[in-house]
Amino acid sequence: MRAIVIDQYGDKDVLNEREVEQPEIGDNQILLSNRATSINPIDWKVRAGYLKDMLPFDFPIILGWDAAGVVARKGKNVEGFEIGDRVFARPDTTNRGTYAEYVVVDDHLLAPMPESMSFEEAAAIPLAGLTAWQCLVDFSDIKEGDKVLIHAGSGGVGNFAIQIAKSFGAHVASTASGKNEEFVKSLGADQFINYKEEDFSEVLEDFDIVLDTMGGEVQSNSYKVLKKGGKLVSIAEPPKEDEAKEYGVEAGFLWLEPKGEQLKQLADLYEKGELKPVIGETFTFSEQGLKDAHALSETHHAKGKIVIKISED
Image (cartoon, rainbow, N blue to C red; front, side, top):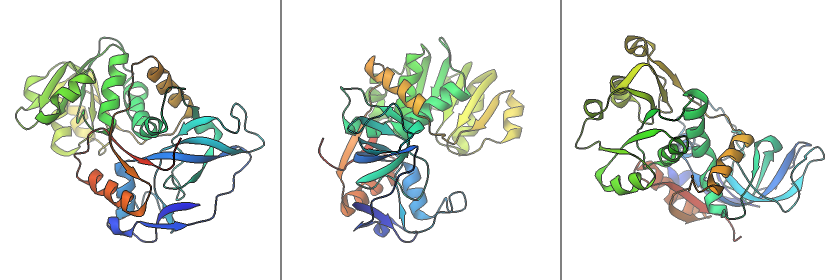
């Protein structure tokens, strides 16, 4: 099968296309004929070596941790999925990722794709959508009427977080640059803050939840908008305990845990029209396509998700 691999850490030029062996599956796994994947910041952070202590993978490494496709083979213990089923998943974080024509996925990480969902849409959801869900639902226990601040609402996690928060009946404020104001409002944001012109910590107050996608000064200032007992959840860097204690809020760092049943809940929101993956750019499944996709992701200015189309439907 074709795959895009890296044999060393480095810039985007370490991405190489080559033929590799099709992977074998275990009794509780399926072999996915991969139709689309997407780019997430973890991809190029692993590629650059930033996460080598946290994820000490052996080379060669196939990056990518979003998959959407068709069940090609199934292990003897797999139930609920048949060969030919359209499915999507956030596979386990291993060195055999999703920049490949075939991907092995544990059955409990799979979810069926709604009939109306394209493979490109399905590939855009898992990592970013599950991250947003776990930040808001699992960590923050979001409920109707909560006031939620989502930083970088036009980004991969942010755009899902706005939609998920609105599906729970929350009031949502979001930061982004001025050029993304209409986009962020179209996702359902009730309040928009142009971070280049306004200090969010001076215009917002008494919020229940902050989803921090930025870290640093943005994270520190986020405590100012929270009410006592509010929650700050970060995917950028672990919050400082002393800051959280000073403001009387609960703060934590979230590292995604793949879960097929939560993907099914996101698929249900899609079917109800409450969640729509936003695809900013689509690239071809080739060495150059992946290099271009990584370059765009590394600018931190991609709108929505960056998708890689691996094969035709």
